[in-house]
Length: 406
Image 1 (spheres, helix red, strand yellow):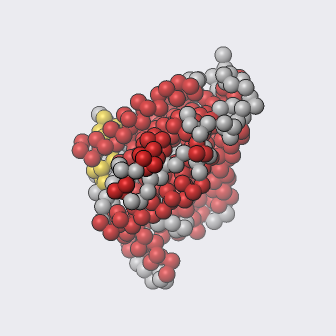
Image 2 (image 1 turned 90 degrees about the vertical axis):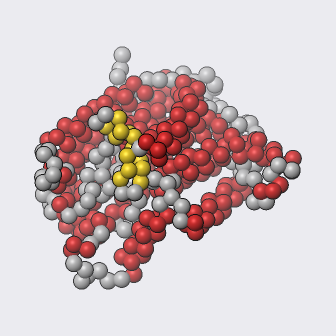
Image 3 (image 1 turned 180 degrees about the vertical axis):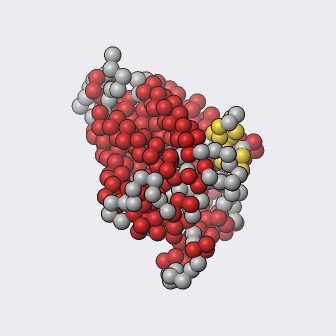
């Protein structure tokens, strides 16, 4: 019996990212290891990351052996549990930098919002797949005239057929995640929007949804809800870095984004070499939030470009798997999960070169951490499960059926 089945290229990509993760975490945690208040060595963090990767990859192997129809049945309980756990964080979770994100479980910190991102894609794939025969006739966005929602039969139908089963779960996920991690909420919304587009939701409805989202953001910022103040500060800092000269700023006043750009500049074409980073002692989180900049400094732009290609390759492999799917659910699930992984990587990389404001997004499968690595491998396991079933031709429906057919 073969252990590694499904898309071979994806397995190679995962193995490459795992090796890079070990190299990055071992070298980037030097500051943490030599902190005067931490009696730990770099070996401690290396062993911790290897253990996390070993457990996660073992789970990934198990997940990819499960029939994707099982995931369809698990979508509702997984989504409900993830929402409840993410909401519970605000009452029982650990708070860092003004944001409650983790639930302490013994020596580990569990971040349920990572589970909710995957669960939202899983649930939305189920909802869209079950309505493919009529999806092009369903409206999902109700009228802005909220006083007509109960009195108008047409509005009640919109709520019953589209808003409640398709749109409301996505909105709920974003609202639950938003107070602690704004960029993750945006990531979930963007991935869900693209899934709806692929799932043949009417373009007019999707454009309305963008308008509602923009209005919601303006309202949240005006009322200073969630981490609006933090977000405004990061946007202001980002604009400041682009519009004012920074040449005379003392090094102690540099932001982490500026330090990351210095690291990229120092790395040059071929890098300074493994373990030779200078800027790691100046950055707050070189092992997580700025892992890509750290990688560029030590290994150079050439290998960093190759690393970027690995993340893009994940998405292209997902497209190939999607094309071979016989039914809607596995296809939508594969593309939704690949979007989460690839877009998170792109957000992380764009922050390091100051293309967008700081987000706090980790580099999937590479940055130090438990929950992010765990649920990234679960997502990849689900993608490989669909790929394996495509290879085994185990779908119940004929291969010539497409999600675009009624």
